[in-house]
Image 1: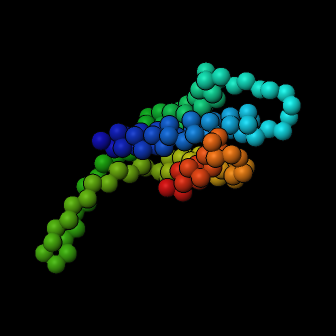
Image 2 (image 1 turned 135 degrees about the horizontal axis):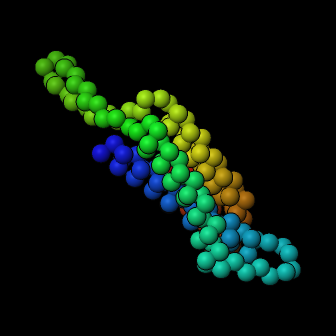
Image 3 (image 1 turned 30 degrees about the vertical axis):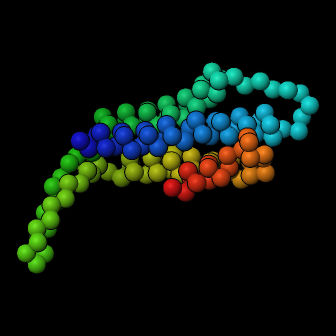
Length: 137
């Protein structure tokens, strides 16, 4: 159960943000450019640009699934006759938490920078508001 929780949260975080980053970058490159030359960025190219962002997260999750897998521990508290039981998933070291925190914080920083750079685009093309909303939630 702990592996499922680890994989689902962190992988879905990146799977949700990577296409949004690439789409925003693509719109900025195509519409927000002041160059005369017309660029073409197809759907396949866009998907290929999102793939490395997702693959880095998959590699991190695979490494820590084998090197430092989360272990389920049950914690029981008794306070004033009320018994509370918690299931906690812990790693042996803080390496997973630090590594994933740095990577995901970097993604959030990139997303904020993209939202800032595309803030003045036409509302038909730019999604800086939605991107900023995704970053802060």
